[in-house]
Image (tube, protein in one colour):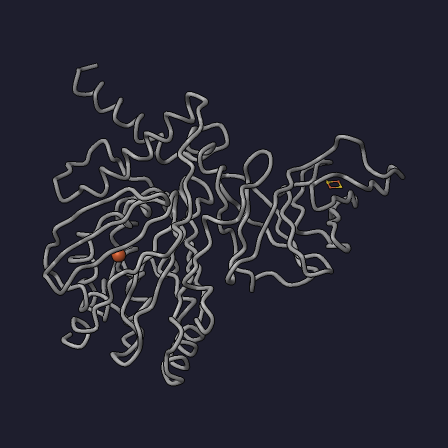
Length: 396
Ligand code: FES
Ligand SMILES: [Fe+2]
């Protein structure tokens, strides 16, 4: 093999450390130190069970008779059929096939055909869950779950704030999506594609000056396009981004958007969103926000893959807000393939955010590999006040 090929292979190995999230990988171990959103609260009724896949692990999410949520392994310990096809019994779940029953920790507590109360030590996975602002979070790590602090978004907890949710299931690797959060330059191009919506209009096509600062929680990104056009975002380790986007009309306040990118496996990622209208908005603004999300909040660009890639036209002219922005991002990020070949990239200085992000992850992954403690990421005591640009919006 030539030296060039060897170097390319070594690069590919380094990049695989960023993209592979299975239980035995360094990234899999690192991500399992954090709470991740895994489903929308509204998607799971009392006494119902659904399958979910997180970090390559098949799981069963069910809501018991009390209304509490539980997360256990995806398959029965007996002969491995899918547990969500069975019955929720109180706070336990019973397998469809031969009735083995499991409690919320995944312990087998009943085997009707054996006429016993389960086998001691027979246990499937069982993980803690937590509902927060319309999302279901889970901790898939070992031992005690960390306090539910890092994922909290204090701006959404303000009295009078209005919250809506979204969920999109993209068919590509999670790390491409995280990288996009730290790529401020893309906004000047991607969000001008198909048609230019309020987001693209507000940001403009100007090329920004970039700076990145590591915080206690993640990375703060600043992109300066003009003295009156400075855009910042607040990224929380390991997979959440906070940005502000224009409101639905120039009369509406800017909206805080929080996006998590949770790997289902290494080729599929679910994006979970909290959209938050700040307190003090007019009744008309609140109504617009609510009716917009009721009508368009479920748009998922991955369901329009062929249409977006073949026609490259935007077929929902009345939805130039979230749906258009998601479609624009999907075109570029999914266009990189499901798992992009980073070993064949050519980066420039405008990719500073990508480089910063990768270095930060490699630093943490080395600590995991060496069995050392990783950085104790902490929620910022006060949310970063991200600039809003009513002037830019009005001029658009
Ligand atoms: S496979 Fe579940 S009880 Fe037999
Ligand atoms: Fe984008």
